[in-house]
Each structure stands twice: as structure tokens, then as C-alpha cells.
Length: 124
Image 1 (cartoon, one colour):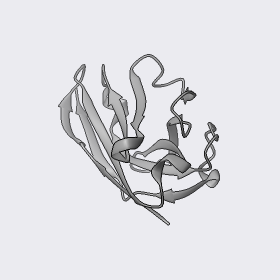
Image 2 (tube, rainbow, N blue to C red; image 1 turned 30 degrees about the horizontal axis):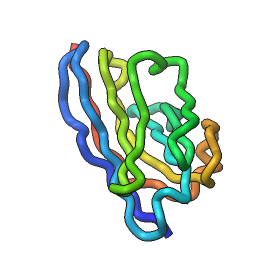
Image 3 (tube, rainbow, N blue to C red; image 1 turned 90 degrees about the horizontal axis):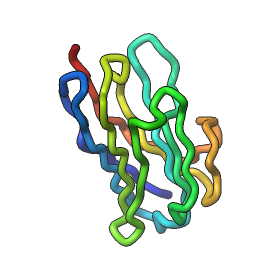
Image 4 (cartoon, helix red, strand yellow; image 1 turned 45 degrees about the vertical axis):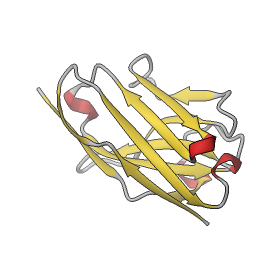
């Protein structure tokens, strides 16, 4: 089992930045790829970004490419999502999730563990 806890969400103006963190406990964090998803009210959960276990491979949704950066610090059992140039359409609950080590895909069904989410609200 891996327990994931997100933090760092909040209210920010359009064009601003936020850094989300995902703290892992339980099994060794470095055994898993880490992904970020988001879900806006009335919409399905949407893939945002993923990073493999070592941090050498990343993949982003087109909607965030060039604005968001995913990273991880295995020594701290923590993953991050740096979000810059935020837009109102980025408003959602953001979730981190863990998948097998070299997975870099976007399918929610491939992720075995999920956090509870953190709210990000971008005002115009």
C-alpha cells in the first residue's frame, strides 16, 4: 500500500503560479511512477502529467504542456507539480496517483493508488 497526500492548492489569479506536492508513505515511493490528474465540476477526471520512477521520463497533456512541470524527489518521498501561467480553465481538484515504475501513460485505470485531492482555483 502507498498512501498519497496532496498539498499546495489554493486560490490564484490568472497568470499566477502554484506548486503542488504529493507526499507518499507506506511502500517505497521510488517503486512507482507518479501521475497527476484533475477533475473540474461536472467533468470527468483528466490526465495532467506523469513521471516514471527514476524521473527520467515525463509526459504531459497538451493542455498543460509548456506551463506545468512534473518532478520528484525520491529521497523525500515526494512528487511535485509546478504550475505556471495558470488559466481559469485549470480550476479543478488535483489528484496525485501511483502506477507501476515505468508507466508514463494517461489511463486512470493503470494507477493503483490515489490521494484525496487538493483544490486549485484560478480567478480571471
